[in-house]
Amino acid sequence: MAVFLQQVVNGLAQGGIYALIAIGWTTVFGIVGVMNWTHGEVYMLGAYVGFFLTTYSGMGMVPALLLSMGAGAIIAVLIDQFGYVPLRKRGTLARSGFITALGLSTFLRYSANAAFSADPRVYPALMEYHPITLFSIGGTAVTINSLHLIILIGTFIIMVVLQLFFTRTIIGKAMLAGSQDMKTLALMGADSEKLIKITFAISGALGAAAGFFMGMLYTIYPTMGALAGLKGWACAILGGIGSISGSLVGGVLIGIAEALTSGFVSTGYKDAISFVIMILVLLIKPTGLMGYKFEEKV
Amino acid sequence: MEMLKVENLNVYYGNIHALKDMSLTVNEGEIVSLIGANGAGKSTLMLSIMHQIPAKTGKVLFQGKDCLTQKTFDIVKEGMTLVPEGRHVFPRTSVQDNLLLGAYYRRDKSEVKKDLNRIYEMFPRLQERRRQLAGTLSGGEQQMLATARALMSRPKMLLLDEPSMGLAPIIVDQIFDTIVRINKEGTTILLVEQNANQALRIADRGYVLETGEKTMEDAADKLLANDQIREAYLGA
Image (cartoon, rainbow over all chains, first blue to last red):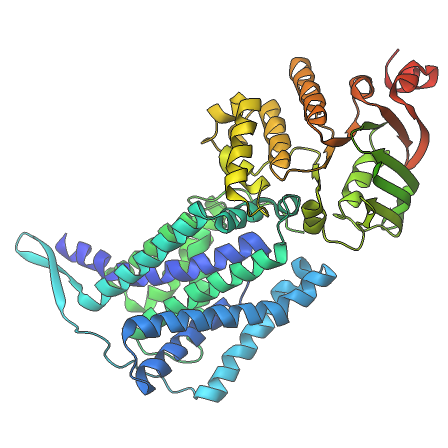
C-alpha cells in the first residue's frame, strides 16, 4: 500500500506539468478551433529560456519562471500572428490550420536543434533537494521530494490565478463564452482577434511554465516538446477537450498513471500508457471525463 | 430621421443569390417588421446588416455610417446589435455572466450595474435564475435572456431575428409585449418574424420578402388588411 501511494505521490508533479500543457492546448483549441501543434515547441523554448536565465544570469527560480512565461506568451502570440492569422483572414484555418501547425512545429523544433545543439542541458540547482515525509503506513514512510513539492505549489498557484481570471474578469468570461460561440460574442462588441491573441499569450505562458518545471526535474533538449506536446493532448482528451478543469484532472491522472506504470509494470511502458488511455477514451467516451460535445468552428 | 438604410444589397451564398437588390429604411423610434416564408432571406439580411456575412454589392448605413466597411463589433459600439435566430445564449455561462457579456465593450462599470438591475426589474425571472447556467433555461427564458443581453449594450437600434420561434403562445405574447416596451423606452426595432400577424400588429411599417426579394412594403395596418398578405401569411 505504502509503495503504491509513494508511486502516486511521485506522479503528482509530473501530472501538474502535463496539466499545464493540456490547459494551453485546450484553451487554444476551444477558442480558436485549431490543433496547435506548436504548443510542444513553446514548452521546449520556455524550458530553454529558463535554462539560459538561470545558468548565465544566475537568476533565481521565481523571476526566471516569470520571465520564461512572458517569453512563452510572446512566442505563442508571434506563432499566431505569422502562422494562423493569414489563414483566419482567408477563412481556411479549420481546413489547413492543422498542417500549418505541424509544419511550424517541426520548423521550430529543428531550428532549436540547430541553434542550441542537440546536447541535453541541465538546469543549475535552484533549490535544496531533499525528501519530506508526508505520512507513514505500517512503518513505511511516504515521502515527497522537495523539488516535486515546489513544482506542485507553483502549478497550484498558476491554476488558481487562471481560475480567478476565467471566473472574475470580463475578458476571462468572454474567452469562455467565445469558446462556446465566437460569432455571437461579436454581437456584444467583442473583438475576436484581440481575444485570440490573449488566448495564445496565456497558452504560451502556461506551456513555458511547464517547460521550466520540467527543466527543474530532468534534462532538456530541443525535441523534448514532441512527446510532451502529444501527452498534453492526451491529457486534454482524457479530461474532455475544451474543459479547463478537465485538463487539470486529466494531467494529474496521466502523471499518476505513468508513475504507477513505471513502478509496477516497466519504465519502458511509461510513455505508452498515456496514449493507451487516450485511445480508450476516444473509443469509450469521446467527450472525456468533463467535456461536452464540440461544435464545428468557423 | 432615418436610422438604418439598406440600399440595393446583394448577397450570395456561393452561386445562390440570397438577397436581390434589397432596400429598406428604418426611422428613429419605429418598429419595422420583415415578414416572409422560410428561406426568403430575412435572416441573411439581418446577418449582412451586422456584417456577419459579407455582401457583394450595396450599402448598409447606420446613422449615416457605412456598416459594410466596419467589423461587427464596431457596429455594436456604434449602437446597433442583433438578437440572432435561435437565441444563441452562452449555454455553459451563468445567466448573470451572459448579461454582463452583453455589456462587454462598455467601460462605465457603475452604469452597467444600474442597467443590470434595471434588466432584473424588467425580467424578474432572470434575476431568480441569475446563477444558473443559461443552457438550463427554458426556450422562453433563453429568448428573454438573449434580448436582455442585447439591451446591456445600450443599443439605439435592435435587430430581432425570429424571437417567437418555437415558443408557446403565452410566452410569445410576453415576448411581443417586451418588444413594444423596449421600443417605448427609446430603442428603434427591426423585427424578423414568421409570426406575421403579431409582428405586423406591433409594427409601424412592414416589408414582405420572397425568395430574396422585397415584394411589398407598406404601413403595418395596411399590410394586415391586404388580402394577398392575409392569404399567404396570416392564414385567413
